[in-house]
Length: 442
Image (cartoon, rainbow, N blue to C red; front, side, top):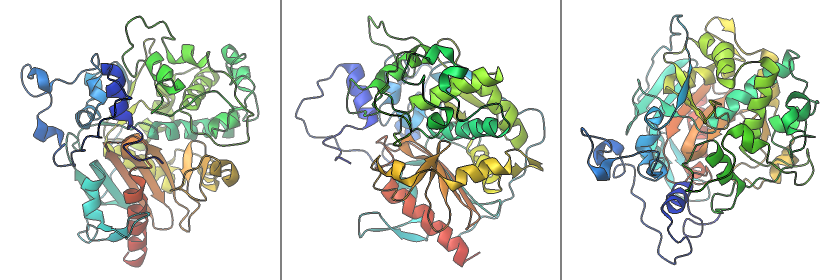
């Protein structure tokens, strides 16, 4: 991973592209405000009737996705664009008993690649955490919020979204609705002549498709930019003539290399999976999530999705939820799919996720902080001594499940740099240290 000076973070690059600044200018990288200095409440974003011009955050200017403004934006997605509801239903809220522990903030760990030691309490601000809930044996033992997020609020999950639909995709494989060995074009004929056409459903689920798509945010010509502009995740420049929806973009994806030989993290796979799910079930991905999982969890709040210009939910990163509800989802997975008095996810589906995929395929992607890991059904499987696995999203979004420690961590964050390689050194060892603490001190 290159240094911050050599490679702009996602947020800074977006701001650069949208404001037309010269990315080649040889200027020093600006100092990044810490979590306290960048606190959105302290900075007064969007306060006033109307807010002062220098405190306004909106979609049209693109400033919503520049640091530190996105510390407010991530908890206010509905004020920035259209959304669809993921209804919790009218049933009772499932109880998460509280048994808060005072010993967790002092749990220490060594930062990856460093001799520096931090505590769990110190890592909260180091990782620009907006909120974290820790469950141990189904009880809330730690809960803390900061910035613009509250227990009653909602936050964008970013690519944690993918794990929801990887799970639903595997559920559809398990019940025979999807054939994992069938070609994508059998379900979505519009993709027959694209790079996805002769890929299998399994290759999409595990992101081993051979397609021309770069997710290098430092390259303004990378396909990821066209993808998110097509879906309206970013405003389009004047004179834009490219695809105007997620589905339109999917039909432009070209083949590159062979399928099934290497893992390559490409968000566009998740939107392809979303289209497959919608076609196979006759329902949108949001309706599938509502009916198959969300109503059954006993969630506290509705969730919601960011959508494109034709109402298609962003399956690659558009889900927004309350933090406790994200923890409920993680607890259901820890309990092998059983939660709130019912088997929500078939046990075999959770087992398929936990077993992981081909480690050699994963190693080709070069994730130095995740040695020996794999990627299965859009979950990151660590294959460590505890059998931990995780849903992960840019800027630090996480559902981390440690079966041996009976632990689930749900975290929302707004780390300045997008790639988790930046926060992993102070996140992954913290999660592992907490798990070992629970085993030693149950």
